[in-house]
Amino acid sequence: MTARLIIEPLRSGHHIAYLIELVNGAASRGLDVIVAVGADSSGDEIAARLHSTGHELPIVRVQMSVNGSTGRGPLGRVVDAYRWWKFLADAYRAATAVRPVEFVFVPYLDAALFAISVLGSPFGATPFGGISMAQRFHLHPMGVTAVPQKASAIRKQLFFRLLRTRGLRQLFVIDDTLEGFVCRERADLRNKIRFLPDPSAPPNPLTTDEARDALRLVRGDPLIAVYGSLDRRKGIATLLNWVVQNGDGSRVQILLAGRVREDVLEVLDTEAARRLVRERRLTLLPRYIEEKEESLIFSAADALWIAYDAVESTSGVLVKAALYGKAVLYRDFGLIGRYATRFGTPVAHAELGLPALPADVRLCRFSPDASEALPDHSWTNACNHIFGPRE
Image 1 (tube, one colour):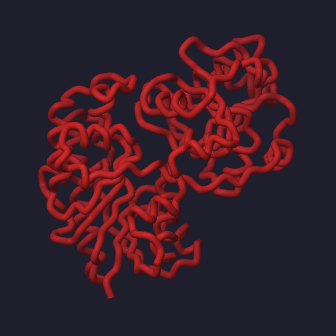
Image 2 (tube, one colour):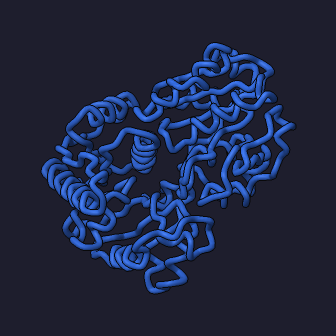
Image 3 (tube, helix red, strand yellow):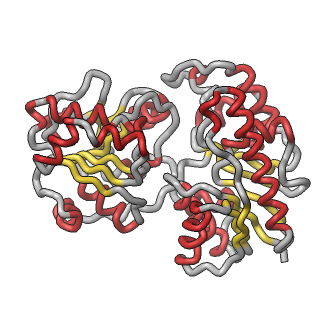
């Protein structure tokens, strides 16, 4: 019996959540699945999480040699791309030693995209697909507020070459402007790319007071939440300094929820952070947030902070905020700015009890009815595209 192979070596951010939803989606369609993970602590955690869902499925462990050499510049990125390509090839060989594979899916294909465009498919003649989340070469030409990317002409041609790769069934992109760019520039490749609205679990809202009580947060005061993997580019320093330095922000509470990256530890050791801790206005939940706790965070918050630093890609936190009908603090930049401006309604800071906003930060709110106007972000829609509808 043949199987679908899903390859995911990463555990941070959305990676585990995506993998679990894809496994659930395949299983609900009666499809056999093999999962390939890394042979490291991340692989251990992913395997444990998969087993905890009750699925009995084969999991293969493969050594991954990507070590973050991107810091060495263009050459380092080339080396890492090749190492990703080799990991995918090794994972495919390990899986086919367990069971014949008829289709390979990689939830995060960006790291190996350009290596595949040069070296070809790492999966032999087996059809494959994946999701691209981080391409930027097309943003400026498509009218998105973004910094023109260096070597964008080369990246564009490599991307078109990728779409012509033998074996690629379809590349899914969570950015509709990339699909539009391909249709405009290379209409002959339009069937190889498909816009897939960033999938998200359906909201499970509670009342604000119920959620705050469960999280042991103060009722009544304005609450701004930063959610997800907490790294420096989330603009956390800007948020803390804004609230501390503005006298009108004396009642604002801040909740930081997610795994803390090392570069944020320095931010949490600043005077602004220490002052908020002394005043009991800064709460930290430094761990991977499970789905039940996620609903508490979004229900408790008055606004989500997504005013990230120079981030041009889209944000799953923004999608969740929209589905929960929440306000967001954002910058009119990149795909976050495009989505918020397109689907959100501007709101005055005073309506939420917030101080005057920093010069480059905007505030909008998604109404509870906004989900009717949004793209279909459901996992049912995503899995229908990737695996086909349930019979």
